[in-house]
Image (tube, rainbow, N blue to C red; front, side):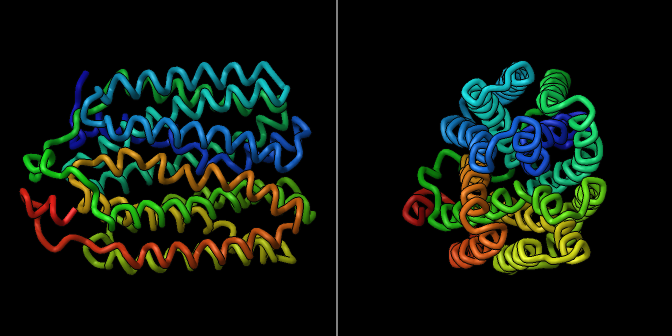
Length: 388
């Protein structure tokens, strides 16, 4: 059944697809933690496997995003999630690094394809900022369920339970896409899409800034669980922090939707990296459970809130939706580096190295976001080409 982005059947399919495609944003601490604890990989090896998944997603998104307007989005989403399901199911039956590495790459390539068409469809909707906030709320609910259940499943059934869980998530996304993946609503500026042959420089600065925040997110989030465990806070307490983090993640997307017309997106983009770095430093250098838990529960929320505003602003700067079809690439090119960089920093400098790196990356992100400005007039004809 073909549905619209403005009806709930289509929105629900996009919500499920967004949750499946953005599983790394929720799962990284459990993912990397399981690879270290259950499979006995070193931090760089565990981070490297997650990085291979994310690199696959980046490569796939970079390939498919420019072709967003030439390929049927529903078919691509179904195929991407179905292949990812099979790859993760295969990962549940192997334990050697080489086999897991190959399957992580296949899963990443498949998820990157599906998520590119999911985000491109959202960007081509009538209200991209609002719809991205809606799928962000779904991700918050998903985080609560995932972080509440998965650590217990892994403890009871071992490392393969993680990959079986991923396989089920991808299967549900494929089925949701079969049932009601939507056709994007035609936007008012659709007639000028063909006139935009090059993306504005501001779009590239925005993409790079989001990638920097994604790098900090993945670098720190990958080791959030291990920081708590290694500092002796106990598995139950650390799992409680992750569940609380999931509950907190329910609020940034609806808050971003509520503040869409009340807060400058440029102000949010400039503040986001600074707040993210401050939280990362607090967690990295925490000496007590309270000092660890209090900032940790807000860590992912900063990325969700800031990215919602970035998504809305970039949708105005690029009416073709090509840049936002590459959302998986802009997020995961940073996120791909994060786990393996984090592993190297932890091994070489301890957890404090993560906090120092977060400060450096935040400074770069602020510089990039300072170059992003909303368009003041519609893009028309030759003028638009000259401006681009």
